[in-house]
Amino acid sequence: MSASSQQTSAHLDPVEREARHWMMRFAAGNADRSELENFKQWSAQNPAHAEAFARACRLWEALGPAGEVAAVQPHPRAATGALMRRRAFLGGALAASAAGAAYLAVRPPLDLWPSVSELRADYRTGIGEQRRVALAGGPSVELNTRTSIAFDPAAGGSAHMKLISGEAAVSVTPEMTKAIEISAASGRVVATDSTFNLRCDGDRVVATCLSGAIDIRLGEHSAQLRADQQVAYSSDGLGPIRTIDPAVVTAWKDGLLIFHSTPLAEAVAEINRYRSGRIILTNAALGQRLFNARFRIKNIDGIVTQIQEAFGASVTTLPHGIVLLS
Image (tube, rainbow, N blue to C red; front, side):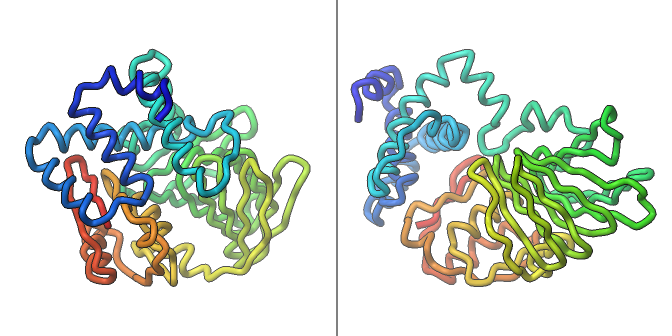
């Protein structure tokens, strides 16, 4: 640990310092079963211990992109440790500053409350909520969980909208004389007489054409998708076009989540979108195991038991919906 990080830790009380130590061990994915048992004993000693660990997890989640600002890319084996040290230092600095409060307003920890952008949205959904928006003279839009959209009246109202965050299924009918343009992160989707699914997670966007054709525009780069084709883009550029199973992509509209040979780490990230709190994998090897499942979103909390039975995982339940899987 660096001198700066040690100085930051010195300002924490012993319980907060221990909680941060456990959080860093679990986030690194290298805690063994004996350490997990030690953690359970520590957590059970006093309710304040579990509460402190929950706070450490929320701060860690909030510092995701901040810890990577202006960072030099390290060797892959050293990346996790270096990122943890940066986040540990930033954690103390942000928590004690006005800038930290402003940052948490932009990126709320564990999505416990809407961000400033989401609060300004014209339509938004909460955790596990889905909603259909019918726009006069505009497209039909179905919003998935934790989704926010806004319209630009100056640019043509419903013909120009922004997907601030989350996932939406959009249907553009032939009766609409103008093309529909949706901005998401650093790119845009332009569509006429088509249906498509658009998902925005931070600066990463995944666009899937379900019928007709849609145009993806990212700076000077562009791509056209036809039915059953998908492309992802981010600040790093436009990815390759690939063929997908539309039934899997749009299963959420039927209240389902479907995983086919999906790494458990990816499946958990998806599951976390539909529940309060956070499921945290504390074992990197477990996160690489392939997961096959089909279940109803309304039964989302039962997935932890399914993972436990499928992989023999150890489960530790903490306040605020935080679950550790090892």
